[in-house]
Image 1 (cartoon, rainbow, N blue to C red):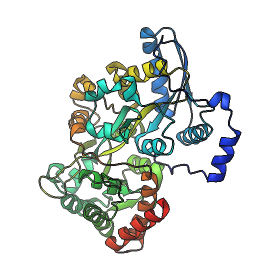
Image 2: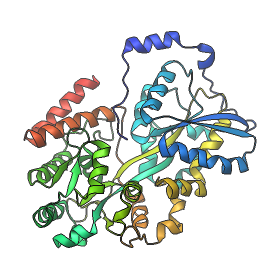
Image 3: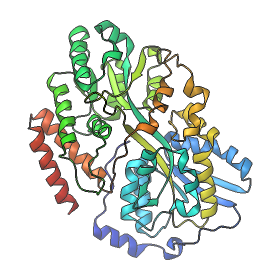
Image 4: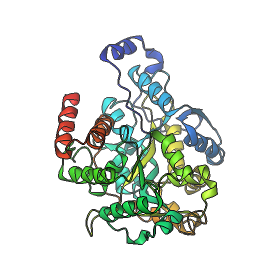
Length: 429
């Protein structure tokens, strides 16, 4: 779900603003504290949009006078329409918008008057229902710009049968050095690569390693931190994986799914939501998958990170904010609706009250009779908080290119990361 952020030139911005319909785009600061009713429009995509649609009937049991219209786009189309609508002072925008966590800082920074501050509508009373790291991802400059929905606590999905064939015990993999040695053994015994990495397009493993060390592309003050000690440590480990020949250089989402189905890799480091993809795309491998936590860099350090997740925003240009807020509040805090999205579509909820439900506590027959979802739920509160800014998408793209030069062209890690920092500084400035 990672796509480059849509950047419009200043000329296009001015043209769109000049051509906007002021009547349709006139913002209101009134939170419409009156009666809840009428129609609201909600934008989403794929299984997220399907979850919205599936929740309407239950929402209407509490709010029978509300009509909810869900419009389903591809994520790319949604962000394009959202950007154009915000530039045009709200013309054509819906009331409620689904956004990926990584996109939220950029939009809130670029369009600070485009989204409702949910704290001012009373959402703060629900904060204890979510982890600090999730709340951090949807808060920008003290503004709660979105209501938490799904989350992606990270782990290592692994093929139990391949581990047994190679004589590897997953419980013995405590550190990333252990993981490296296991990968070498896996390749020697079975010929199977240890993990997939889309080298030129997505530095996902690097980002997980960074977060488990409490780091991201930017520090807590918003300064570029690509060349930190932790970043060097993480990228050097990724390079060791590649140099030892245990990395499958896959291409995009379809590449990782193909590797999963065909058994081209023994492990897949990813967010909890990938469990749904494994079950859907590789049903014949039932019982042959399990999960262990990310290895640590040194004994006693964190093994936890997050990959992906989304949240729900309300447009400041909505003419029916009270009803939009009622939908967002109900959708994100109702246990039954959150479980619906998880059980039917694999969207791992950030709502902590769901974690005592049977589906989170029982053993999964598909995943080697392991309580895999409980294992993921148990670490949600332990995921380190990291700083995201409006430039995260640019940083991610630069890091993917840097990763490619380090792995494919054998460039020095420290020097390459320093160059990446300079490149990002130049782009930002």
